[in-house]
Length: 284
Image 1 (cartoon, helix red, strand yellow):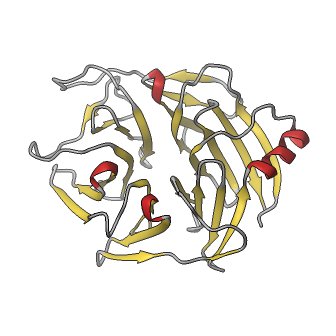
Image 2 (cartoon, one colour; image 1 turned 180 degrees about the horizontal axis):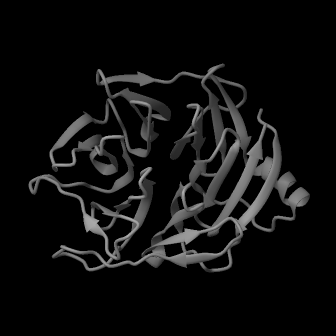
């Protein structure tokens, strides 16, 4: 089991955030971006708790003029933000300089049904998990769309997605497992880590650190899959959190760990979507 050495509340449930569901980090600005779903916006957040919002308008859209239900975020090394909007069933992007969001290019005959996540590779290919259609989808910078995996027998309600080193990691939520697609040969690998305690039951969000260690969120639990040992270890659950609440003077219980981001190995920033809280947790 991983040992927690620090918990810090970055943003308490003070009402600034309403159902935050996505988080990413831009190192050049030392700022986090939060998908503040029920406030229909993307916020910036600094570690000292200061917060603000990005422009919300959408350009070149005949359907809606603003973001509606921003669910998941990704940011490139150049600072371009991508957001999956679950209500509009589309993905939008914005550079650091722009004041508007733009819909990605896509084949007009192709439609999503609840895109739950978004991730982008080094050459600009966009990937999303088309949650209710039970498939993973790739969109090139020219708007060409291809289905990488589909069918409930192969992939069932994929929710979390994360690109890392030519591998597309995702939570096969309905099948209670973590998988990755090798981008080079399109071969699917099902991870089968040795569980120290409880095995995964309903994995939701997924993120990786720079070394490729995998962090998996369930509703009230968080796990680490160590790539060197192939061991699944528990980081957080309700009982562990109760101890941390007393030790670090945290007032809110865990309700729903909806998203996470890892700066370095063991330095985890995560979102309690129901409570509207953002935490920093360091483990060893």
